[in-house]
Length: 310
Length: 310
Image (cartoon, rainbow over all chains, first blue to last red; front, side, top):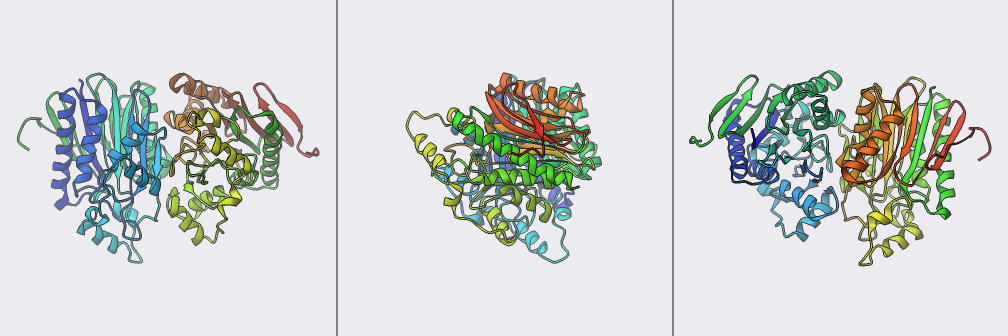
């Protein structure tokens, strides 16, 4: 069953005109991650490349295409975690970085810390030689339009947020059985300056443990944090539930306890995987045994050969 | 068994000359928290007051007395969580604030977010009318001496950190059965600018759930995050373990899996409590049924009437 990579492009209600771009984006990301795994690469390399591709894709709420905070600026969060050592790296409220997920990985690889925030994260990026990009290069007309719309008095950013563009994430198991996850986001529409959501928070935005599995989450960050969704799902797997059952249990609990919807991608150490969501939609794709799987709406599950033309 | 409050003043190896101040500090904090509970106050009020007192006390690594980052500056993290709604509030890498725990509570009470970081947290503090204090007022001669010592080439800040001064935290259950936790810290000695540890990370630095209990943690933040220690202990309690058994299981797992020591204070909904640590020492105190309990070394458990002179 190994290797495998599963990616998501955010849970919610994705407008028709954006569905195709979202689907092709997650499929490309899964292909890229799988190419690394098939070449003998690590699960960490696979999830970082898959997520970085989606950060570069303006269809998603991460990197270029991030939603804007209340001041009309981009502040981004990202995390990576490797299941062998339980090491993780994260950045929160970082600015002017094209690929926060790569910076999160450098935090894990090059520092003794697990998270750097705000200006400290940017300072570290400069030390690592990561070029800063103009904020304008991360902002799309679409994100600016939605920011303006949500400045209106009766706007409901949480409602509006869900799924128009989504947080991105990936989980993978490589041929050696090493498990990794990565998640990246522009956060919540019209959020306060300095708001940190679930994404860079270990156990909420993601978690990976070689002995249990890995999860990357998407949805309303503040609700995901209330239930530490990634860690919750992995606890269910430790109790003997399958990746799919555990994902559904975690999402059902988030709905019943804090009345919130979301989605996850999940793998176990044998390569069994799940892409589950309680929201109306979540764009997702998985690659395993040279087959590409993908879907967007509840119950959808398309497959094709990984080598078929896109 | 209700109400009850349990506080800690950090896990580690506390030098003799600092032990007395640490013990009297946690006892005062437990008394203050208990006075609120005895007067019919909420567990949230109790944990915030207990932690704020320890932030004001230069014997602890939180508020005044915080350790310094690599640049010789104070950046602080804090979290609060209430078990009824699973709502939480946190600040990370905040500067020039006397009581980060009170600011964390305002994040919970006055925003739709769960965490504000760095300059965004300070901006929010100004909006709330919280006065900024000079950084010098948070720095002690002791913290400056240790910062300088750890700039030396062969210094080991993690080793040196453990227990000389500690992260502070509290858990409580009030007469109505509502559970809360709070944790506050200056973080890790000579940390990088913008480093965020376990404290403001929900499930790592603390977690509270009326249906299960609450935990506040202390130790090497990066290790605590690897095992999401607070949430791990509460999962064991959900599986039927007592507060004490679950705390010991969580700490034992952190030792075996990531080779790290720490300490916790834990309560369950009935008011059963535990103060456990795998480090050499942890200053702790608990107040319940008009009795003050406290200890510092392994196996120590002193009791006296809560109304006895200090």
